[in-house]
Image (cartoon, rainbow, N blue to C red):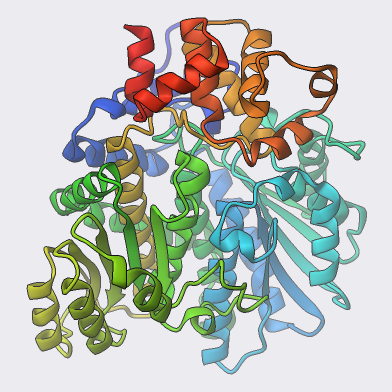
Length: 591
């Protein structure tokens, strides 16, 4: 049967049919591992543009499809009701990894808006693994549905009305599934909302350990309740990620866009009597789409940043984000995601924020010396050893303390010429012009984004999304240039939860052409560092394997080299030591 002319390749039923949308490889980025910095940026731009493609004549509902807009409108009205009747009411945003970090970002931003209005705070966030997961990989708790329920109960103690927004890009996280199931069991208090980017029939259908349900069965129950307005499922498809499965990118951006559209509409209705309509939601989305265009209009500058960061990582240098306000938080988030995604070292990409934990304002406060995030920590711990191999990237707006930015730029410039800036200003604002001129002289490059003067405080949302896109491009592209990506797959991914374990097994199968059983066997050998699997290993479950994998570096590359070369684990390790650039080691096996 001929496919509609508007259908994109990834939407064809014949394209990687066994995979959900969020796990498919993107046809636009098949050769990303061989691309120049400039081409990588263009590939990322094309992938991000898929978020806003028209859903007419396509297989899946999309971000701007009418059913999605109508559901978002109804959710916004629920938020409005709580804003107008906040007594014993709460809006909880929850997720794992990137989704949890976005939950934190959104709850913080909209609570800040309520403080400015002298209104009671109604937003709360939950992230699997607690606040340490804001700053580092804490993948194992994602598999714990019971922990999700306990976290939700603690957050909502004493509340009589809770709007729960659970975010799981792949409709797969047991932590969130447990919370949604709990909400469904207590409809007198909880109204559950699921945000994800796969069609419901692609929700994970494996029974969750310790539970009688799967993520898919929870979604099906939600769909039934949705017919009566007691639950909501928001699941547009935004296309495969640029790096297969890396939901920190489009998944995170689309989450931010959706939630901001909903919460902004609700605030406008509650405090400015602006009606909530699908058209209004669509207009808000179009602002984000324009943000995408404005950001990538500076593709040349983004490419230069990416190139500098890539050269730094290849030479053993570091990429340091020094940020202010919410842009500082985005720097922390982007840095935290590089370790599990690319098998990066903890020092390779680091984020620091002006004011440290006081500015972050997280639930648990300071998290100890292993999580040093203030600019003062950078000055004391990193600056003394900074060299020209390292890259420093300043992230700020002209509403921040630009004099402080200049001071930090001077300090960094004394150690490295590799100082760069990404900053945002509102059109017509010249207050920081003199200081900005000095910063520009100190920096090797400066990316300036100018936004129209906002009528109702929309600029922060725009410059946050813009900065997220830039940081995702820089850190992803830098690791591509370092050889951490093969084709468009994250072959050095850490296998630290059940989702990543299954992704790794599928990846080994695809790249080696070997049967699934042999791929899983090779993966387990690499995880446990043995040439023969014991009965104890083979009788363990996936969660136990994922726990063991936390201390196993390069497990997936090791397994793949074994499969491609039919060699022992020791021989594979020797090959990777001889050729530490993962992509080149794999290509040597294939040649």
